[in-house]
Image (tube, rainbow over all chains, first blue to last red; front, side, top):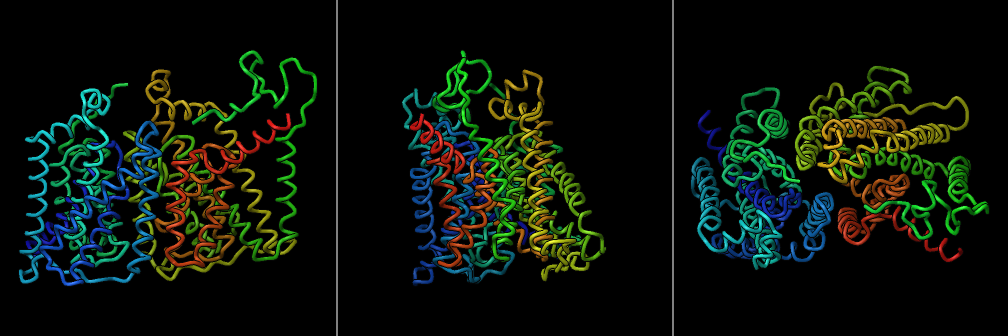
Length: 285
Length: 343
């Protein structure tokens, strides 16, 4: 029983980890929390559902979906975020992403209605435990790929330069705008994976990612907001904590599970604000 | 954020610290027409005449506009004056509304008591949410408040014996000692609104308010000058939560019914949209924003159930990009250009 809960928590945690990774990537590049990240993921999941529904095999639909999400992320950065990115301040940017959140949510409800839809599992024949472990494996793979690109390629070097200091990077000849668009695209693609991983258990609906976003905030805060490794570890931890609390703490139950991440965020902020893997902030005025 | 007095014709440094009216020159003895005071007087007369001119349903809507204006005043303390983001003002509004509802319907207390009680409860809640988040960075406040907004509705459903659960809680509305019930209620809400506006006006002009502005514009410089950003911002956040809670109590008096689904995340987002669209860090902004909060869903709902979301989402993105000063800024600019042409 306990072991089964643990594995189930890991499966949910994989989804949170992927979205948290997407949040951390955007944070590293733009210095803000993208409130629309979950909704972009939800939109991508609808695309995947539509593709599978129209007869495309699951493992073909998945890369197509990720590519569409990547393009959508780039498009959002180029059309909406770009206009407020330079010098407008955090407030404007975050409010813009909140506007996007509302807009995307309403558009999805308009196109696909708010009915619950069943979403196929990536491993239809495997028992629940194995498919949960598979999901956790996918999250680990994505993290590995991101780390590989960021640490060991020329592109990764450029990305790190832009994240560290856009102005200096531009002076050194980096096309900062393109790199930022790429970062947003990558974040959206990783977010899409999160939607696809979670949709079989959560069922597909426009409000699907709202709760997930809260879990991912907790995951990113727990792991440290500037650490990709922390995001994934935090996501898995949050998934397990949430499942165990829902099962063994009678007061929490199924309907108050959503309070677990809030308690986690507050606890982390009070006890260890930089998270498990994050670096302490250095202020330079 | 540009200084609100930097219009054409405003006195330069040579004119001393007194703000001169449009077209007036330093040393000028001509009396300028007091536009500002006239405007306020007309507004006051209109507000007082409203309950005797409007049919009951319109009066109900006007009362709700005032209720939302109080909530937006509070939200503007956080978003406009401190430059932070709160997504939990819908939840604070709901907690205030439920505090009033439970006190009236379950405990049988007289309704005037519920306003200070709701204010007190939400002040404490605001302090509790702001304390961990604002010690660090604004980033965390946005996340914590988002989580609070998501958690509050299921929490309200969890204790059906007290809150009535998912079905909600009907509440008897205040009886009028004279006038009609709805006219009395409107005037009551109007009185609270006027006090709330006066409170914010004095607060932003005070030492604490100027400290907030300084911290918003340059936290490092403000800290060097001896202001503690965390202390000022946390207390501003608690005050603003208190405004939202008080508005919630007024909502209960007005509507006479509370249910968890009225106070979801989408209310918080709608309030944020109202604050941004109305105009940040102005006194006219919350009132204009409250009109938007009231009007957009009502108008858009007729097109499609998804339309309010699309309209408010688009409005947020467009206003932030094209007119960051909001409706209040646009109106002010229009007024200045009219006045400039006349002078």
